[in-house]
Length: 207
Length: 207
Image (spheres, each protein chain N blue to C red):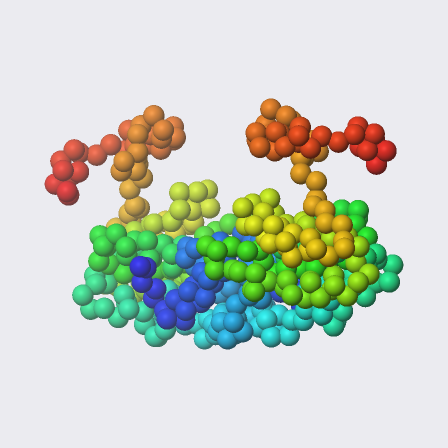
């Protein structure tokens, strides 16, 4: 344990080191950087973090982060409200939106089932998803969770909840990334991409 | 430019991305992490950063960060106040202190001369260093700045300021790190370590 010449500095380092991926060395570098910034800038940073935590809202439909009661996507009448894409968190919403390929709406789970991290189905926004789907009008649910064991577990859990409802349940396509070379692709992905081969016409007609 | 679903989130990401080494993706990850923390924890973090910036003190002697007017090292009568070790910032003080090999005092420059970053001698605590040395009692000054062009420039600047004063001017030893293999050492370090070879006895007697 390093000894710091100042309690103030030590506290700031301890706080910064709680951020994900930040060790004590990086935290110290950050704290020393803040000491060289104008006080007004540091106050703006501190207050924006506190404000973020205290004033953040979540869309009452899809649980995405939003400043309004309904997020911009759920409030948009041009989006297809009959298709719901299930994602882990807001970063995935941003990633799918960036593709410009999706016109449906989302449902943000707020995590995935992970016994190691103590996250169970009750910690996720699954009940509100079921309510949305049961209220009718939804005809397709797309599972777009990570391709990890936790993602697969969550997919299966949702599958069991949704299978009896009269909807189409799909998952985003897995396969070789565009631009990837076959020899550098891992065996599982390559193997599955052969098993799940698709009509060549479906590729060329989409271009 | 990513579009965020919330102004609050965007502001927090912008602020976090000002930290050194933090890009917008990492900043977003941090912001989402904060949203999962209890509000009290986020408030503690925000306020500790603001408090750090507003209430920090610097030792009036060595310019090290300190909660008192004099830092623990300068206030310690057991330290040798006749030797001053010049370092770039507080991290170097902590690094040298960790070795347990140094009993003198320090002088923290607060940076090194770097024309590219617009840091000149006037931005550093050089005047207070000269005052300390001129006030007598100091018989040795150790240059312990980084072995970079900026460090060498600063060393030379200090050498010209200090050469006429009646003190011994030394620099920390450069050479092969303990545990390093010769074949993996860069040529400049290896070359200099041969030119600056030292009596074998000085190594064995120090062990």
